[in-house]
Length: 400
Image: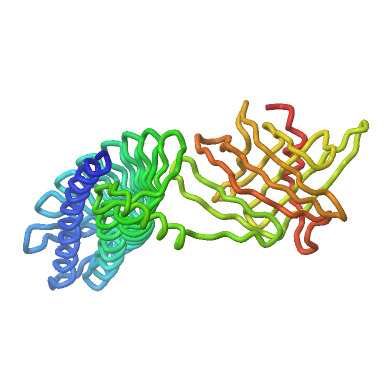
């Protein structure tokens, strides 16, 4: 129910932006046609002003009687462009202030927005990102005046491809978009933490998915154009379909685990062969370190007072991992993680682990790791060099 109401709000908000932007693109094209096509008989010099037949004026640099270089173009309707010109076109970097209050700052190519630019709408919305042929195209962020934010891909002014929509009330959607609506595979999370992971069609949950309630209980669910199907017979068929088609992850040595963003519920399956163990002995106590490094992905588990196979509970300062963007995340205060060493023999250590919560020091982002397992050898791969993340972790484990 919440999803449908916000979908309607989102559609209205976007249409208002779309209408504004379409008129904006048409205006820019009309301007370039006037500048480029009108013949000027007088010799124009740098700094000269010319008033066009339609009442618009241009003041600035000229080349062969065409605006070229820095200049200011003022339209009779109140629009003003201040920036670069080339051979009669707005081309380069400039600021276009519309008579209705909209302001675009960014790159231009042959009279159209092209490249990176920011459009501040008079209604309070703001777009920051890529443009192509006068339309939002590529990666971009739309910030609504309501507080909602869309960040992701655009195609010719439509949300198209992967995107993240965060609503003012805490709801969010991450996944595929088509024609400005969730369409394909995605994850919708409610403000209370419950979520749906599955397929969407034209903005609605549609098909077989995985529902997680507020308490974390997960079950297979079935939707038809946004309406949940509760018929037992159909649910059994849905469960069978889900089991047959759900992703399977086979552990093939090294280290593997699921990393889940607790905000969007997006998951990443991390696996690498680059894992090894190290031991140090001091004051009759053994410290075990499990290390894994692969490009921007890393995970370090530190067991103080290691005594061999068994279950260990790790605290802040004893775990350091990387998020999907490669930044360091570690256990917050009072959070305990579970590590079980199943075997330690013939130079190899095998184990499983789960980490209920990890956090960025610089933000409120939270993650969890589950389904973790490893088979570590006593030496790192020859081609890899350990970085200094673990040294920092060990030295500072008692400071937090």
